[in-house]
Image (cartoon, rainbow, N blue to C red):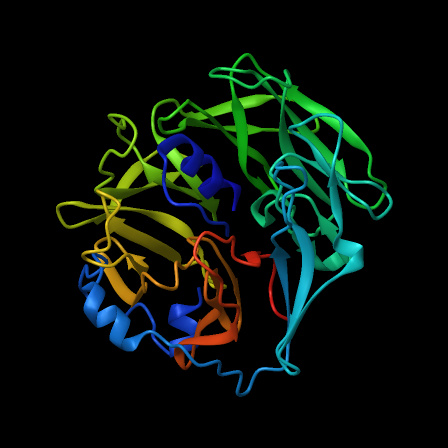
Length: 375
């Protein structure tokens, strides 16, 4: 979910990474409530219903996760790969998922050979190749054969530092530059038809959306002005307007047709609420995360499934103590989330805690992100 990371860096949103609300709860578009209730519940009601005891009943799969690495010499370290075995309720690092910094402060790499490099400092599990890849899952091709990343052309990064777009072959580790632009470009999705790029801006939204053909290096502009964070199924999701600056209210969610460039507003949020599409369920349904624009917890931040224009069904509100991460991984079981208090699943039993990882105040959560589907 690089899209979220790019927008977080640009807009100062809370940190996080990348449902089957309709599938896992038995709802369909026609059966779901026709209401826009994505604005969040009260913090008090959220606390009353938030799960605090682990429940793994009916679960026997193994979930890949990105584990937080402790700082070395006061310097932050990249995440490393690990697995949560739900049948045994055990969480352990995978030696094959070890990573390390390189001489370039913006680059890290896998210890496993062939060496794979990236710049996001997060890892995902590439199941088709049984490899830990130094990239968010949205930047890995669906067949697992390759991934993409952006590399700053200067090790000293500042506003407007140009980037190169790289594509890496997972099997061989071959790393090639497929595009060098004069602006700060970031990939938000690696689809079969190409790589989708946005332009980053310091303490502001990303701007525009372009499609890059990694074979030829050709660029096609889809939209020149909007802020588009996620791409799936022929559409980009975001906001067609212009942010006024850091912390601005993003009160609606727009959909951009990648073929025609047509923009349609799909959700208008209540006054004082900001939101964006955090990802998609296993059927491609957008999942919206919304929170008070002032960054507070009243009303509580919440998730909702967006079935059609102005038809959103709230899934759950977030407990302040849990500090649930924005990003998630989706599979046929449901939506998997990481938070300060543990790992959660939203599925046919609603929201439940599946593994508890309590932390002390000021400490980083041991699980940084969910790194793939449970299998």
